[in-house]
Length: 123
Figure (cartoon, rainbow, N blue to C red):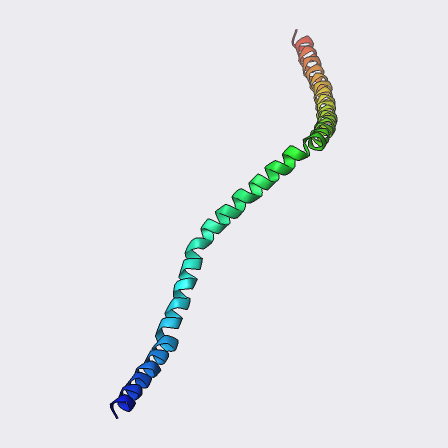
């Protein structure tokens, strides 16, 4: 009988341990795994960014001739576009100031003519 009692006791303990495992230890382990994954996520992001920068550097190094040709072409196009824009703005500005100058001269001539006429009358 003592063997049967011992086996019954072991089965009860095993049953309690199974309940304890499924209700407490397993959810705690899952929660701990989630916390560790959340804590380590920024580290993995940094590692991913570093790996992407290294890959971009290697791709740039391997394709430097094509990148150089593209950059020179882009720079030439940008210079032409900005030169055209600067010339356009300069031309419009010159036209505006020339027109303003003509108008100012016309007003000045009117003022001086009026003053001269008034002076001629006063004299």
